[in-house]
Length: 121
Image (tube, rainbow, N blue to C red; front, side, top):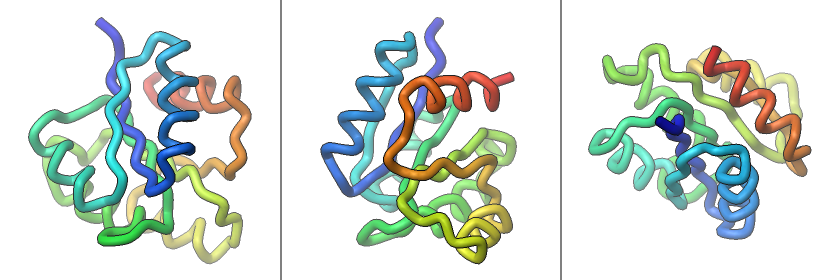
């Protein structure tokens, strides 16, 4: 059975790029345009990995990660940040919220697939 990944980004273009890359690699992909929609969708249908942007309307990526980490089903789910932010303070904030890893946009498709496979163990 294919591993399930949710990509969360307010940019439809970025969601499409991530989804295409992961589907080509054999993953089942769902999408959400902000943290609030992702949180609702993930509670209804958990996934194996979450990939979220940092800066989004309604609920940003750090708030999404903190919210997911309070739920038993997501305490150990890998959550990757995929963002244009590369500031050390932002990375530290993401890590303290519970992010598993940090990738910077624009992303290398092969590296994205490699990282997702690595966090899945």
